[in-house]
Length: 125
Image (cartoon, rainbow, N blue to C red; front, top):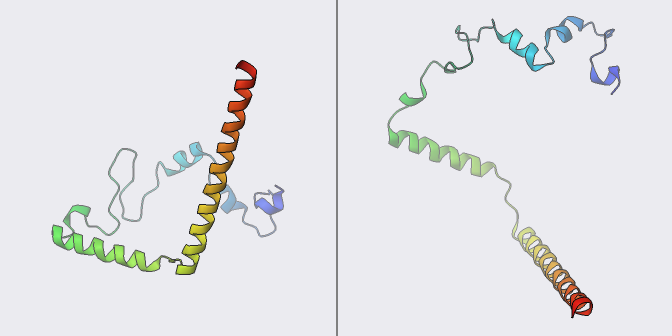
């Protein structure tokens, strides 16, 4: 890639040299940079330590089992509504394509099997 396309050139016309230098490009650079960074909640995220909760609540105190189950089922229904379901015609077409392909492959493997069987009997038979 050229320097213009990647955006990592030393002489960038937009003047974002400081922003490009501030972003580490290697894993070691990210580890060094993140050693003293604080998260938005005021606590330091360290390796091996617990991740601070996003909203200040712990995940275990969200209510009773029934309330959590209701919430889960509501979210499942909401996600299923986002799914693009195929029409009946699309399902019929896709099924026909799969059946034709499977029939072709069965025929091909069967013919190869018969051919190799005859070749084996001719050579060793």
